[in-house]
Length: 130
Image (cartoon, rainbow, N blue to C red; front, side, top):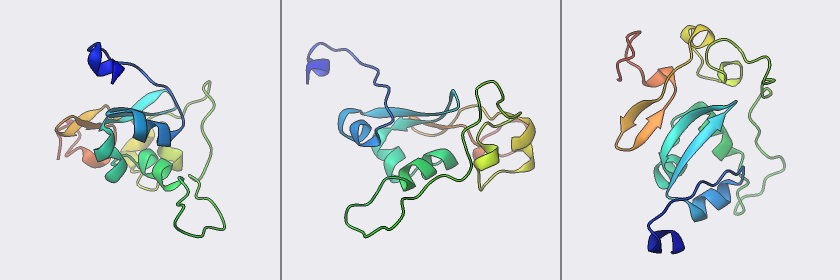
C-alpha cells in the first residue's frame, strides 16, 4: 500500500518464491546471471515457460500432499568462471536442442508483458517468434 501511495516501485531480490507470490506483481527469474523469464507473477506461477522456472516451481513442497522426497532440478549450477557456451541452463535442461549448445537465447515477448529466453519459443534461426 505504501508503494501505491507514494507512486513508487521497489526491487526485491530473493530465493523465496512464497515472498514473491505475496509481495510482487511482476517477477524476473534469473539463472546464472541472466534473466530467463519475466512477467506478471500470476501468469508465471500458473504457467511457467522457461524450463528453469518450471523446475523451480516443482521444487516447492506441496503441503496438501505427502512427499517423501523434495523435487530437485537435476545437475548443478555452473561456476561463474566457467559458464557453458550457449544457453547457461542447457546442461540441466530436458528440452535442450543443438542450438542451445552454441547460442544464448535472448528474451522474446510471448504474450502481453511476458518474456522468455528459450529457443522453444523461436520460430527459426532469424529469431522470429512462433
